[in-house]
Length: 115
Image (tube, rainbow, N blue to C red; front, side):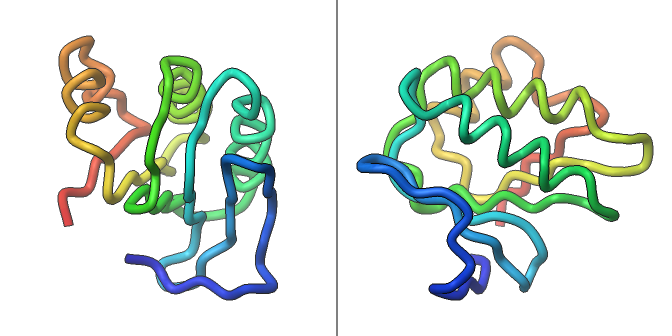
């Protein structure tokens, strides 16, 4: 799991918190992503993908994600600049299965890390 700091909170609501991580560089997502906060989640992904290198997203503490959250991840992966990737770690098995079933795991800008 990624190292995170308390003062690196990028977004928080009653269901979801997103923190910046440093080892590896990226985001740590905790709680639930649904129609009520997916826009904030998607915007955070877009903003963080403006930097250099891969964006690692730690999902070990993700408790729930509806289809809008999956779409936000896929959209971000499709929009990454060439040579960059959205790297997902701790992807819950049901989300991994859904993404694999529709072939989204094969997107060039997406890596599902099994560690």
